[in-house]
Image 1 (cartoon, one colour):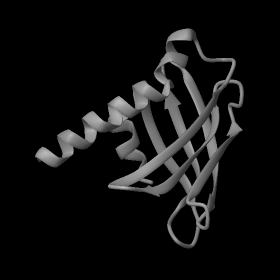
Image 2 (cartoon, rainbow, N blue to C red):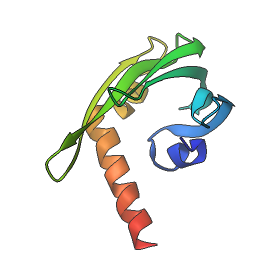
Image 3 (tube, helix red, strand yellow):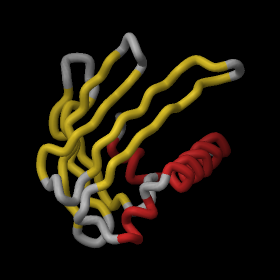
Image 4 (cartoon, helix red, strand yellow):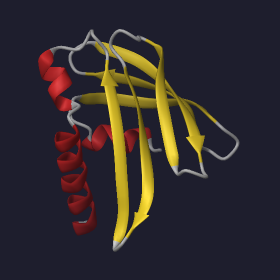
Length: 117
């Protein structure tokens, strides 16, 4: 995961920085600055057999998110299964930015822009 890349397309994300990585270079903990004043860190676990990544808050649990993403082969591409639980410290506007359709649209728009470069 490239934390700088996340900040380029995740709505509301001001800054992200990987704190620790595993021996393969995958992030184990990332610090996020989200919205007007939310700061928290997430820790990641990976399951290569199921193609799944999970994240849980380490610091700032009240403001943070928890969730998972699983990537399954599908005809013509990849099927993404995604789940997100948002902390109670988030405002309704901040929670709206975490909706799957908004995130998927932002990612698709960013990918389209990257391909044109």
